[in-house]
Image (cartoon, rainbow, N blue to C red):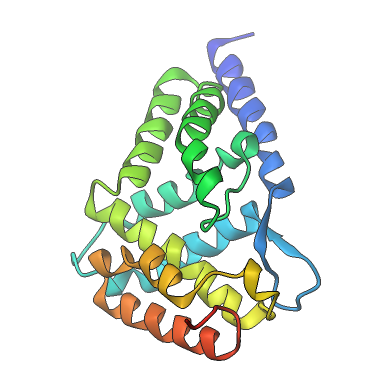
Length: 200
């Protein structure tokens, strides 16, 4: 096998492995409420949202391809670590270590320089350390809000977060885009009126 054939085999093995993201289900439903969305669908949606909404970034012109790359890879760690609900405080404590281990395994499947690039992008996203990462994180936070508004249904009050908790969790949107933060606040308010969040 030539070096190039070996490289392609390694990359295809990685791509076959990440098919498993389609089996990781989130708490939000698809628009007809027939089932929960999976993390691969979420990744596609936020990548498209970033392309459509990039003009609203407060930092001005951003590297949209870099943002899309971050959004498409940042949830791959859920293949090993699972999707941790944003308001599960106990599970959130274990999440960073679980996801770091998952990132090392998954991105380690790629050729060394490509794996290093993916790991760096993943860590950049997690730290929100650049304008691109901050904007990517804001899009990742906005999508569940808009999705929940159109597909959510009221649940037992003990199973849903308060409006205050949602606002606190999503506050970082404001750091990347005042316009998107205004939209997020409006969406949270409307969802609360529908009974999707608790109004203390």
